[in-house]
Image 1: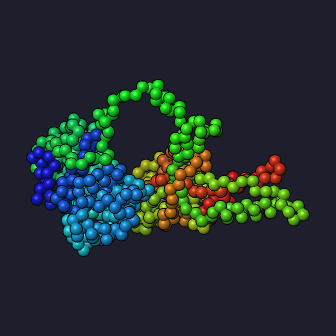
Image 2: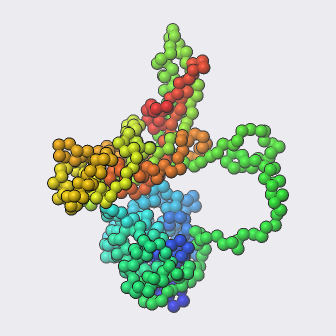
Image 3: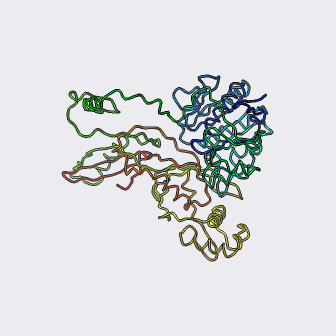
Length: 525
């Protein structure tokens, strides 16, 4: 059986379904369009596959084919938290393709890894051809300094015997795990112009002319390797519209309304709550409408009733005259403190072993809320740039906690002069300390969480968000690279901790208190 991708372009279905391949091309090259053609043809042939959809682009397949849409959208066929083993068992038994839509999932990597692990287990028994297509492969199989096994790499190496094929798609091949790319026996390479990316795919081509032609390829045109096509191929037209396609200028209507009439229309209405239009004559003059934002808030059990009780106790503790309070509760307002939630793989045990943890970071503080919300100020004030030697040495120390120079020489494989330089730098930036010829690294793992905290989406007044910083997750990620060297940051997301702001009043004097909305612990006002 062949899969047709264009005029005179037939690819063996067995190669697609059980081989290892890649679709590579920069933005605008037609990479996702080609992936769309491939999955359409597989759907037409009733061959089972799962496509990891990071942007909600492939749900349009449902308009033409019998496919299952799994996601967190309201109209998805099945929720993302479905029994994954049962999902794949049904898909394989009924040749039912799956759109695994993680566009509305906070921890995309964790969801995809769970799905791949479940598929691997099912195929241990079934051993039926099943293709996994992964868009944005650089997110799920990244090229990192100290790699650990992940399900994508596991499938790329060991999935074939179980019938699992793999097709990875990316704009940035330089950022994809070399272990995964090295397994690719065939591929489609579209336009590339960044030197690092050209270098990354150079090993895939025996013909230097093909590599040199990549920067000049037109949209929808691809060079191939591992397939019987000598020249560039052109992909055929898709059957259904690609949801993520770039809008066409032809879709813009010709202007038929004069600007003056638009201005009058805009002046005749005002923006009401959550964007509802309210007639001007019906709306009294008021201050600027509140601006709202959607945020992910960590769920807590310390509600407004407990906050009220706590505030009442505060008034009785200090200002009391003849048994009655002279201070009253002026207000209790709910606010939200921004923090960064990390999903981590922390070095532990022997080489190539990692433990999964979650961390909450605020500024240069680790937030520990296992029993009581506690902010642990770290020694890292400003992230330092670490060399590969620095990271290798710090990772060794992270696994053992402490070690002497001879051990580090033996285990790191780094020459003495370079090792001394690395240790000197790590001490200077206060990541490592030295006591009696023994090197130690600060262990923050006690403040890490073994389970991901539950969150809920809330629409809140922007004024209730405390010191919002749009770049917080990026800054916190830089901090994390120094705080836990050798740790793999799988994801970093801005989330919020609920906070109760209590104001106590005594005449014209007020006292302010902040309570965390998780356990009711006192925070610094």
